[in-house]
Length: 252
Ligand code: ADP
Ligand code: MG
Ligand code: MG
Image 1: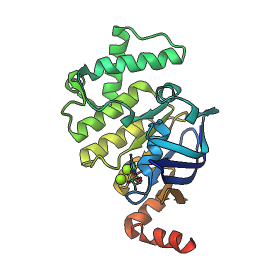
Image 2: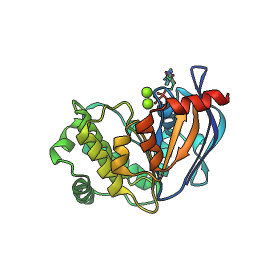
Image 3: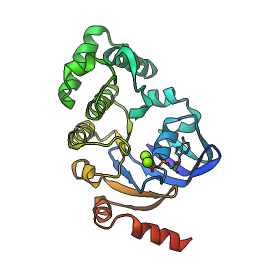
Image 4: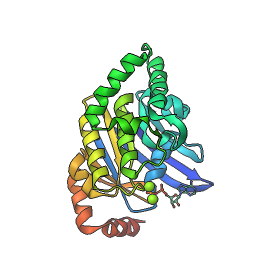
């Protein structure tokens, strides 16, 4: 589904990603962990197509297409979901209106009929139940004054509605409380299917107790320096990152 080969990226001329290699197959959940500043959010941003990140080398193939050639909105239409790709606050635009527009754009791109108001509403009800979201939340302006947990809930709901092939969730800087952890993990688990994949960026081992990744990767200085199963996350929880830093730094 997704192949990242020797990906290098820079911000304002400073190299941040220094040769990322990653292969994600349908049905898999990958966790990206690593110390602060290792490049986790940069990787997510590059995949989303944020323009301040310059890809200097390497390639990203998504479902046979060169992802890096696609505009951010086309990546979304191809089925890549990044929560933070969506606007943070649009006063006056309820998330319902926003979502209907977004969903119908995706459907048009996929060659599907747009949903009329009635069908959209019934799909919304179904997905609201699935991710346990309150109707009141949806009639409020998108993300306006949302708490961290409410934002997460809304993100997972957007994900449920858009039915992406690949979801990338960067949780690092959101200060997830226990409710938000539960919301994110329940959502990811319920939306998991043999045809879809998820990349979860986190430094919380705790999140991985709920989500249970198939693979855990440690990012350090812009490279994946170690990969393993969920046991690696447990080891990191127990030992921290210093031993990995020492291993890597000693090898240089
Ligand atoms: P992580 O998510 O692993 O904590 P980031 O990807 O956010 O790491 O950051 C990696 C490095 O890139 C840090 O040194 C950070 O300061 C730098 N960086 C990230 N984004 C920007 C940006 N927009 N402008 C300048 N520096 C950035
Ligand atoms: Mg950070
Ligand atoms: Mg980050």
